[in-house]
Structures are given as structure tokens and as C-alpha cells.
Image (cartoon, rainbow, N blue to C red; front, side, top):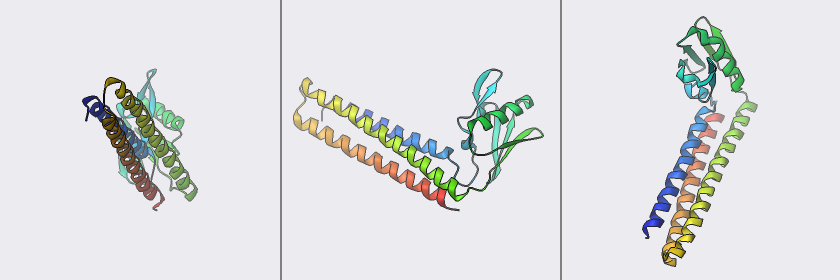
Length: 187
């Protein structure tokens, strides 16, 4: 196969794998029954006027499956952390307890579980759209290789490999989402 076509397929593979990895990271943030420090990923705290990730200003731990404890390195940040978590609208309420912020996760209702499954499926669909967009963009570039003297057989082979790569990543996305849905719905 042509060297340029191989480069394009490698680019497609990396970008599609990136979409699946991004989906996995997003799904970790969804609460599926037990506490995890990743649930607070993306929460930005106003640290002296600068939005700063919560993990950069505090130690986050999970002493038990239903609780998250955030211990800021500066005690003055307790209320800022409390406000940031409330503003992030994650579905739980923090409580300042001496020199830590404590989050006790409420039990997940059936309605909330269904909502989480719906959100996770939306994330999966976004990942699939990203994968298909990569396929479309790379396919356009592969077809332009014909102008550079690449044979039609090589172009057809590259198109087939690109489609196989797309199918593989879509299946992987489906497997990831099925696992997460099972995790969310199990009590």
C-alpha cells in the first residue's frame, strides 16, 4: 500500500482510538453506585481569582464507597471548594466538616439510574459521531491520492481498511457503553 495512505490510516486509527478513550474518561465521571475521585474531575475552584482544577488544590479520597473527602491544602479554600462543587451540579451536596469537605453520596433512585444511562448513551453517540467524522475526513484525503498517481486498487484497499477501523471502534464504543449501563443499573 502507498506510504501516504498508510499515514492517513495511522492518523485515523489514533484519532478514533482517542474518541474511545475520551468516552471512557467521560463515563468515569458518571456515578454508578460507588464514590470515586474522578467524579470531581473537571470541577474548577476559584483559587485567588483563577479557575483551578480541584485536584490541584486539595487531596481527594474515598474512605468508603458512599463518601468522598476533600482536604484542601489551604483551609481558606473550604468555602470556595464547597461553592465550586455546588456550581458543577453533580447531583450531590458537599458539607464542610472541620478542615475537610465531605460528600456523602445519596442512594441512586431508579429514575436517576435511567437518567445516567441516557447521559452515558449520549456520550457514546458523541464518540460514534467523532469516529464517523474522522472516517469522512480521512476518506476525502484518501480519494485525493488518486490525483497523486495512486492506483485505484490501493485506494479501494485503503477505503476498506478505513471502514474496518471505523467498524472496530464503533463496536468498542458499544462494548464500553454496555458495560457502563450494566454498572449503572446494578444495585
